[in-house]
Length: 219
Image 1: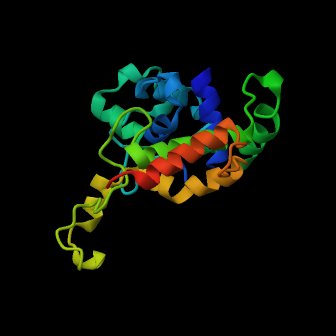
Image 2 (image 1 turned 90 degrees about the vertical axis):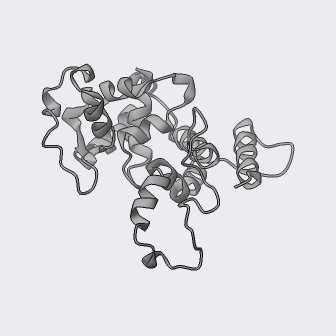
């Protein structure tokens, strides 16, 4: 139920930005949930009647079993799981988002009540941690660093690097790309006021610590 609550919440607060893939959702979930990717996939499959899954750009899912007919992730092999996790998810209709925002997330009786500012705050923490370490769970290769694409010559324009798109795909994860673009949006919407004094809230102190760590991290 906790994973479902976060999935629904993140769906709402990222709907105006860029859609998350299932793997990205897993990357941004609070580490305290201790949820594996296959567990997240199981939850997403239960919501298939109201979600639209879109395959990665330029790829087809012809070889993937009909998602609506899947009962368990265990029915998929590792290659199919990886491919499915790269699908982005969105609501089939905007009214579903309105329903979530108006009835589900704001009603304590629903069991899914989560302050929207709190959801933005959790996404903000995730974005900062991904930029610093590449992941919320362990050190990863895809984090912000100098010459992230490993270019041999910094004087060349991107158009002059034959395999630039492949380097970008290999070196910059979707969650890192999202984090670099949208972390400031989540900061604003989280109502977290980062100030340099002793009166800031615990949330603001956590964000302030991560921002300073990001700026000091050696590349």
